[in-house]
Length: 65
Image (cartoon, rainbow, N blue to C red; front, side, top):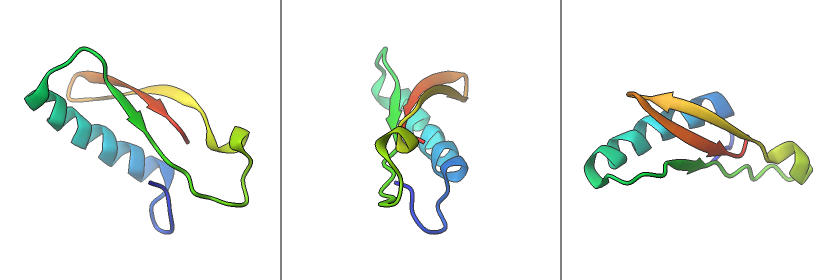
């Protein structure tokens, strides 16, 4: 979740790394990370995006800024 002191770069990097560890344990074929931006002064189009990020040889679909 984005918030004061927790910008998108840090949140995504930490989230992908943490989720990759969970996936190593749980397995599965689909890997997604959802980032919530609670910024009240931004429109939905400014808060929502999709991209791919990788960690530990695992690629994730990242939803959110």
